[in-house]
Structures are given as C-alpha cells and as structure tokens.
Length: 311
Image (cartoon, rainbow, N blue to C red):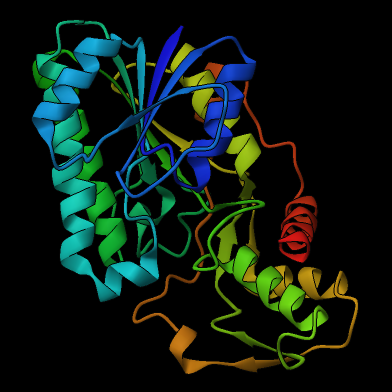
C-alpha cells in the first residue's frame, strides 16, 4: 500500500506517518516550503495546495493508492480572526486536491477527506449522539468551510465516480498539539507554572461546553482502517462517542499539577459563538472497520502535560 499524506507537517500528520509506516505502508507526505517533517519513515515533498498543477504532478510521480487530505486551517478561534484564509485553504484547497485526483493518470486513488464534528453546529437538544444523517448547521467559520469541503467531496464522488471517504473527526488531542486547542492549552499553562515561568493562575474560557475528546493516536488508527475498509461515498464520525464538559478536562489536568493553581475566566478565550454539546454516534465506523477509541481522556491529558514538562 502506497499512501500520500497532504499536510503531513501538522499535529496529526506525524502520528499518521508513524501509524501507516508501522502497518506496512510506503508513506509519502507533503509540507509547505517553510515547514519540516522530521519523520524518518516517509518521503517528504514540498507542496502548497493552492497549486493544483503541482498536486497533479506529484500524484503522477507517486501514484499513491490512498491520499489522506489533512491540510487545513483547523482552529475555530483562528477562523473567526482569519475567515478568508480559512475558506481559501479549507474549500479552494480541497477542490484543488479533488480536481488533481480526478485528472491523475492513476484512476483508482482513494481519498480520505478529513472534516470535523464541528460541522453539526447548532444541533437539536435531543439530537445527541449525532448520527451521520443529522442535518448540518455550522456555528462557526471553520465548521462552515469543512462542511462545504465535505459536500464538494460528496459531489465529486457521485458525479465522477471517485473513491472518496469523508470523515467528521471530533476533538482529538495528544502530545505536541498546538495550544490553540484546549487540552494542550491547559497543560502548557500548568507546565509553565510548575517551572516558575508564570504566576500560579490558569486562564480559561467557557467550561460548560461539552465535547467529545479522542486521543490522536486512536484517531490516526481510525483513518488507516477507513483507508482499508471504509465504504466509498460514505461519511464517518470519528470520536469516542461520549462528550465531557471542559470543566472535567480542567479538573483532570489540575489533578496532575505539582503545585496549587488558581483559575480565572478570560473573556478573550470566549468564542463569538459556542455550541453547548457535541457528541457523536460512532456505530457506523465500528460496524465497517471494527474501530473504537481505547486510550482514555485521562491518559491523553497526562501524556500531553508530560510533553510540555519536557519541552
């Protein structure tokens, strides 16, 4: 199996490279000219997804069996600040990838198109757990762009008989993630306080929102299994299947702290629009691939905190 990861320099990319390589894949991964990929078990290529012709040349050079499209502006908070950039990368960039695959010399390339659980948006009070059939009502700019990319992927699948598997990935975390995401943010603040680099106060946003958190190492295993066994043209939720309040994430992180820490609410950490609860039904991916999350949220938090303590 030969796999191409588009957007391999990001947080998930490194974990996916390792997951695929350890399971016998020949792995190729792309990054921007100003990025690096340190993994030794893959071939690295420079690529900007705004350049459709370059994507096409790379596909013909590699002739991959599967393309994992990870390149994205993936932060909700950044999407509010940079909506145009988010749309260009997440919508136009996705179209460029689909067009390049459509026109590639190899005609049986499978695309794993990564979307987000945020796409569900403002959901009905009794809608959770969310099945893949639930209507999408995106509540932020990032979610709207990912929903759009998924819809376009579905159109390409039907219109051109392309092999596209679409994923709605819910919150995933782990060691090395950016502090724009809540688990890494809390853990980094705690590690800085323990090192004496900050006052013993942790800044927080909305603690009542409930989210489904899965370890990134489980998530990339799901992507690999979908490449092997996912049904073309189908959307899959990828998540634990159990939402928890952000307050639980904070309490767990603080329970591992080696000193007393006060918490304060920072208005700047409040989103312009926040969705009370997002929780997926993951029965479809379990039925088609046998996948389920096995790493606990507590373990993810502990490993992330240890990462920041050591870096």
